[in-house]
Image 1: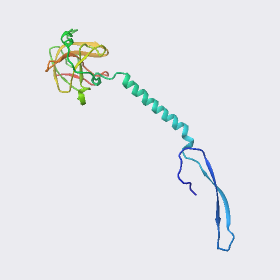
Image 2: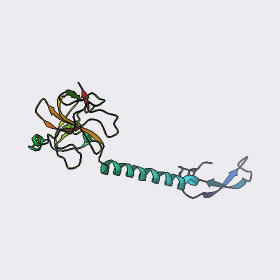
Image 3: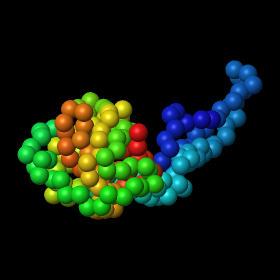
Image 4: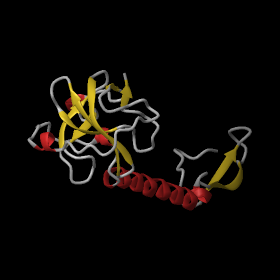
Amino acid sequence: MKPKGGKLFGPTVNRPFRVEARQGAKEAPATADGQLIIAPPLQPYKWPLIGLLLVLVLGGLAFAAMSLLGGGDDEQEAAPETPTAAAATATTAPQQTATPAGLRVGGTAIIANSDPVPNNTNCLAVRSVASREGSEILGRLCTGETVSIKAGPTQEGGFTWWQIQSATGLLGWAAEKSADGAMPFIVAK
């Protein structure tokens, strides 16, 4: 005997039944009573599964909140591309030393690891000052664009910043590498 349609969760159900059998039409039937016990297979695991699902949902929400509130990298910030006069005044030259990446004031470089997506929101941000906080994004430069290095390097907010100028005249500050230091954005030419 099998029950119609099986449930995965729920209480155990007892279904009584009777079986009758005859050897011939004139013989008295032989009967036997029985019970079909229907025990949903996942019922013992109901609470552990609910707990696991809850942990996964809370973990996903925490990850989403960290992604939204944590900021993200420079190349993922969305902002208008409107150059201002602030770029012309942000010409402080901290120190003029070469870095292990081979970047130096007066040299040229190429933008790397900043491939565009729709609206260029992940290309390298060129900022009004050498900081992610309190700075305006003047424009964005994508992989393959050549720039000249005007000033730097300077350290701010865990980034090494260089003042760069693009072939189109965009002048501002850009981070040399990603926050974890693994991806260079400005590479010596």
